[in-house]
Length: 394
Image (cartoon, rainbow, N blue to C red; front, side, top):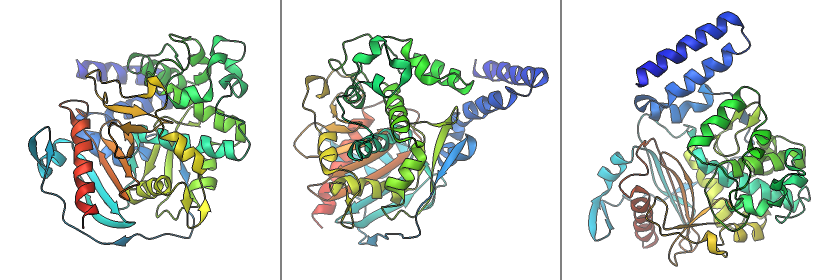
């Protein structure tokens, strides 16, 4: 079936290029993108996606804040539901491409797999959502956005005088907008129309509401797309330029980052490409209440509000589905328990784990097409907690 689909797509590309060049490049991009997600190409694709798809560079500053090293061995095993799991086997099964542990502001462990290296820019996937959230917080602090309680219609023309005006920025931050949108079946449609120049916001408004905003949490990437549009409209700057000015040039990163473009706009819900240590630097910013070397980069109160689960729909649903034991804040995931942890998570196995109490940050990237199977997300949290316990006892 897959071969038939690929042959059909190639025939469409040839036909369109013959008829007119305008859409030829777009369909060629579609083909390259589909090919990138083939199982055999996945690991390499997540290390080079910014070269496969249109992307814009986010430049680092000349000043680099180097991590010191205090290396320790990786744990050999960890416990999960009374069973002892072997670390090496777990890393292999989750198709891990990079693993970095920072404890007490020093690198305790760093390793790369599947052809990756220390300067590889790994696709963030939905880890990107947490970066977009940070930009919302900064835009509010700078006065471009008045409040999280503002209607999204205040900043996006397409939503004015529609039922979408009920939705607040806070609703989108908490995945509680109530928009009648299915993350699986509808996302491919909206992404495709966007590639052909259709405004994503005009497409979103057509879905309408399934729930009253602020009452039901349903994970949907278009919530983050809306947030990205608000930041761009309010500041008058692209997301990449705003991030470069307010974060990337300020926190001593080692490498330039890249942000995937869709219809000439940054893909707010999952388009960043960043090296492992630089993901950790962003995590360190959140661990340190938004401060880098004495300068407040992200507002302290924004960090606090981002990891709150103080509404019923934000609590862990415990419904047996993937991520059922995780609560949700402002585009951050919060595990059950009293560990005071929070995480950014991306599909196929991308993670930034932050435990401020133990001063531990863990970054794990992967290319696991079966990332939602076999309780892998629960095993991963258990793995991170075991690492945290080990390095904090050193």
